[in-house]
Length: 279
Image (tube, rainbow, N blue to C red; front, top):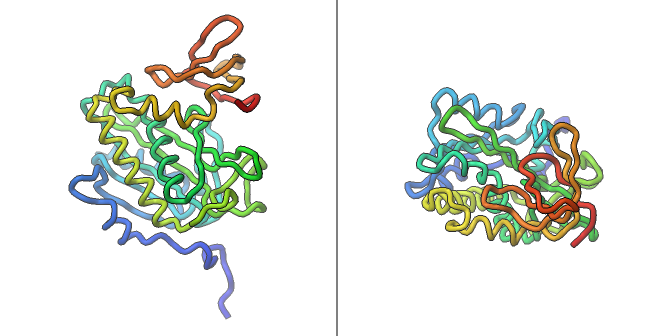
């Protein structure tokens, strides 16, 4: 009799690496390689190493399990094997001014939310700057996140983590969620991953063709339309222990969140934002 182990969950089959490569690597695609590993500490850390060793743009690294995944502010991100999508991509946006590279994590959020909404049938919203939200029993829950890291002078590694099939007893914190708990019509990770990579390729290609201009590429307006933070009272926890409370009224040309506060309109470029009330 075979002893069950953490990799034998039949409801969580492995990704098909060869089929994924055939589906996403093409002459008109920015993706140039795709590797699936059984487990790693962090796909972002691994891909940063490859980038520093000279890996070309378009490398995609996917892990069936991350043991030391990181979110914003160095928060840990972990989940059972094959329960989610854990991937990183290497971009080298030559021709785009460096000051516009800050739009890349927001671009990844728009692309991922669009892909999940279409493929999983789950309305997916964005929490500034780069959390993915779904609604479960009338409550917003975080089901994914984006992490961008500069590598050298020419590269950016974008990490994407999505809870796909996590059950209620597997959630790391009460505020977390998954596509399955949100009523996804499918939790098959292969088509979900293909959809995310295709959407990301489309948005990246258009943004780069526009020289990184967030308005000309439609990124700025699309992000604002899907951002659940706008129109709400929020508390921004800023570096250095400061806090700023106000109503989120927009996202400026640099991707910063604009807050209407008692002291006037102020821009937030970094920090943690807490939704105080619904719009």
